[in-house]
Amino acid sequence: APLGRLVVRKRNREFILDSDDIDHLEADGNYVVIYAAGESYRLRDSLEGLAQRLGEQHFARVHRTHVVNIDRIREIQPWDHGDYRILLKDGSFVSFSRRYRKRLSHLFR
Picture 1 (tube, one colour):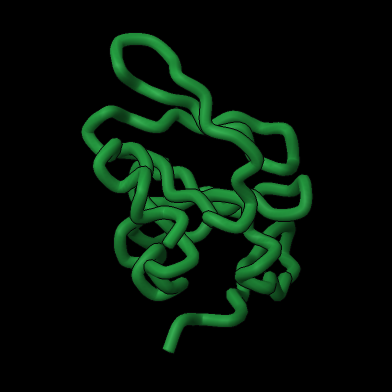
Picture 2 (picture 1 turned 180 degrees about the vertical axis):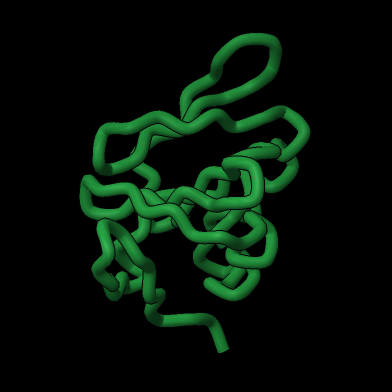
């Protein structure tokens, strides 16, 4: 079963994040930066591993360094050289690589 919540540490405190509140994930070396509700949290994990635990029906890899919460996508825009960029409901943009383009239709099933 997909994780419903994550526990992350920031500033010597522990925060509990609902997976529905997560906008996107970004790889950062041996860490994953989790963007949720206007905040960012670092977690020592792999991008692929965390995305699988959160559930592939709600989280999709769209770039080598990015995973998005499908429910948080507002718009997908064509960009340079066959790539796209994704506008999320929080107003941020995430790169959508042409390598992952075939997943475009899969995102909204």
